[in-house]
Image (cartoon, rainbow, N blue to C red; front, side):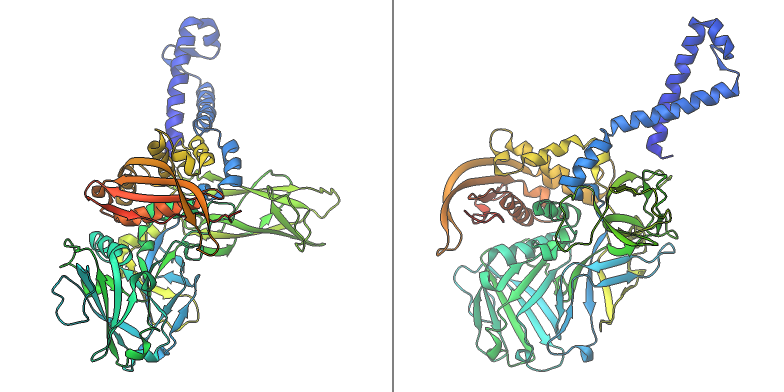
Length: 610
């Protein structure tokens, strides 16, 4: 029995006890046959009966307070299946290889590379990389943030207020232009204010990038071509969202649960500067049009690193076989019988059953359209997620419901169901934070990586707030579109949508959850107006009417991730929600600045123009 259910039980038992005393006082003859009086009952069987009724009443009361989860969960599993799933643990790791094993073309690290930690609490945790990255035979020798006068170096372009100098070196002690380098992914790490300042400087304030080798000529590349923020595309997603889920929700979820995944910037222009990089060392100068006084003296070499990638505690697994007996309406999916408290189903990917006359493939119950070329099916499955009833377990259990469309009573009774699922390690990653740097990480594949170092300790697993009276708030999803922000209630409507994707428990003392709530409260004003803009490339574009949304932020609420990162994710979210032949143009101001923090170009979503 969980603590929540026990509270309902105590409340129901107190009510039954009080009513029993009142019943005994009002109807003593009838109460006497039950051996009840004003002080209680002397019959232990009657007492057990009252306790049993109290338990049943507590379960019914709790189900009602859960807002009829059978109805809403079925609806959510069709429209927003991502909202029922836990948010697995996430981290940032640094990968390295021995210089002798690094060829000039580097080592490709694919998305989905499996990693494993040393055991904590008797169990090793499994993670996978979420971005493809490349390990180059390069190292960063130094990083500096300077203000004019810049001293030695290329001439600064007009309007330069500060500059970042990154010195790189070829580990093979050969000219850098011997490396077929097109783009170098930089990871920004360190204290939150430094990371936020570096991100804003590289993505917003950079005006030009210059590549300089000792004694060589500076090759200049416009910052818009050389610097690209990462983490927004589907192939860089931390969470595997189903096709029917709106991708903007994924961005919000990742921002609130793990904003560090966006702290990556791709540095390009190496091929343009290739002929001049004839030395083993070179300087990359990034000129900014903002002074960044608050972090200028705080930037160190280890605040920009190479070979880093986000990882998530998700991995595919074949669950324990299920004996399909046709005597139960549902079957609990057990990912690993040896780790009941250390493994949790994230999503069900495939259901196949085996019997004497062959295998059959089951399809999701609400996926009713038959597809050409797909194996024939005669049944459907539906997965229902419920809170675990085990004491001290904050996780969930997934139950499989099978619908045999062509039930044949003469078919073989022995049928074994195999479930392929994506799983997490439940709440075990929380122990990784407690053990800190003593936890060792290893690559669980044949790839020449010599060391894995965790830069950002794994987060705790988060649970969706659907059991915290939030079911019917999800109707807010149905109003999504840029028009839901129009009118006097636009600001509160936006905050309501954002709160739906803050999965932290408001009653806990989690600093990450507090930071997410601060970000939401940091949106203090919203203005809307209809504008006409040209959208698309000049040769293929057209004029369209859309919405210009101006947000005002309180930067004091964004110390953890930075106001500019929040603005970038928000504009991408709103742009993806724009309708056909329309767009959203996002303008962001802050209470602390006189000018605009950002004025993003019109974003016309993913729908094709008609």
